[in-house]
Image (cartoon, rainbow, N blue to C red):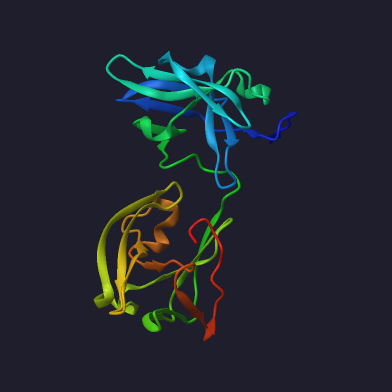
Length: 249
């Protein structure tokens, strides 16, 4: 249920129990977390101050155009502290947020939704992933060279993003792939590792990724390779697809 207020800040009550840990110690434990869309793509958690167990020490100020003047806080537990790792906006136009604390996701050591860890950022209740087997023929070109072609893709449909075509490695020209040190994480799929593509005409950095051990809900793409639609030419059943515009363009 979306909470309405007089500001343009989108706030929604989460139905999940949320816990935050630092160095294995409890920072916050709440059944009343607020999901706040600071950007259009995914929400962040704000925790009611009454459910914060760590000591919060004033550590400066920070202004945000929509939220007003913020108070930076150092988070302190018995065995560790995180400098300026929390923030609150006591004068926020959204009244529900005036007595809530935003913790820096990466500064905390663990986040739990119910009893399961969640990574990268809070899950949006409006994001869905469907992974479907298909017999559509997918061909991927880079610099005019076919680097992958498959008639057995798994197509991943994720809310707000273009379809992603996950292909068996046996259908990919692995001789053109160059290992990358890049890794990214997704709260719905897990941690991806990357390859760059060397066509002989140039090296295209981090065009291809793979989830070797995805999260349970995304097991269907385990061990399959996927190319950025935004950066390569993809032919679907012989028809060149328009390159989508997305946050990854």
